Length: 240
Image: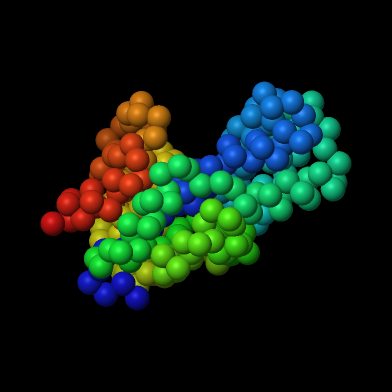
């Protein structure tokens, strides 16, 4: 599908969409400070569950993981949520806010001639489709993305090599051509997984603290940017 264009795969949660923004909805059920704590712990357990399931050779849908990790986080922090509260929060998770730099970046991307943008996510197809096409922030820009690639078919999660190989297959690249694909992500574990499989990775370091992940000391992002609006120029400049 990509032809001679550069395939740029954007991670969704934590890169385009702010998982911290769910704190606004959580604040309906507890004070704001506690809501922010629940949001952060919810995200932590959401990711941890995917890694634990990978290590155990088991699979649950990302929607089930998201609900289970919400229950874990809220119980740990002493926030009581009824079933209807959790249903509302899960619905709100499909309408997370984008980061402030995303709208301008995607508008610029829509004008680009040399990039094939796709979404690449741990989320289920239903979650990702709803978030991208129906959310107030991303919906107006949904046409930018030429494909939504999710991991359901391979029943495993990032950073397992299988998911990056699946991405390559879905965008029409062979294993030997994986170096032609760029991943854009704010998640260090995703950078390490992608680069270890031969992809190029643009790491979005919004806090500006620099690369700190040391699980694989020799594995680093191909490029680093502090603002997602810098990605297209950086990717194209690197590819020239």
